[in-house]
Length: 339
Image 1 (cartoon, rainbow, N blue to C red):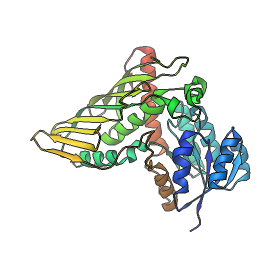
Image 2: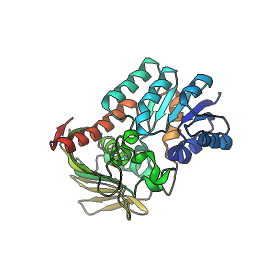
Image 3: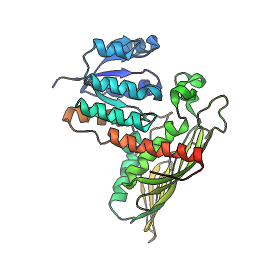
Image 4: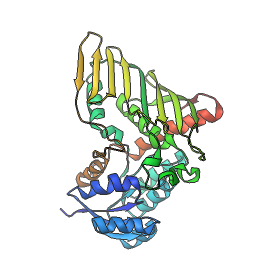
């Protein structure tokens, strides 16, 4: 079959380190165009991977025949770019958080539906081998009901990750809209919904800027979640874990505890109340330092090749975003927010 023609909007860190190389490695894909307002970035990608460079995504859509696009831009552009691509009849993979508001998310979903194209959100936590294994174990029922959990994602912040370092859009509120919560928290709200096969019903949160000087976006958040099932737990997002960053989840269940990502080398540990301990070495989580394939690109391409709607749909992305928006609402009002 002919190859799927892909364009990438935004040629910053996530595009350079994940989307573009993973597309290039996929036999079903031809990378045909790149857009970035810093044209030299797009040119650099075109030079390395082939295809054409554009300074604007509108120009790209006007001049290129593509099947699908990846939106790898600052958060405030996710919705307009996704809607424009969907209206041009292109499938879209958008980075997280999919949007900045519920309304934007709903407009993106509507645009994809109206134009008969797929919309997928880059929530790669679901696809990491330890998380796939953890879900399989939980779904087997051997741990019984989840009663209590904590899930956490923290690292030293975008300075070391973004191609622009400390000058990154991540720190500009008008472009990022949200900080650690949009970067890391939304990954965990998505993961806990997926892992527990449950929805968040109530959120209470403390969110603040504790240490990143000169920015108005949040660098730390601690949230308390109540799930529809009644399970309660915490969700933490932090950009100030300067040593010992965390990407772990622990579930305390009727029949024991499951620890995910707490011990290097033993990615999933199950300790049952009957005394048995099982450890699973299933391969590491992706980190900023260690770019193991995210799985997102291959899943998106697989959707297109097999003509199957993506599991990590716009609707899923929106439900995960709404948890984070509710947390901001809670911080602002000092109230518990019901979803």
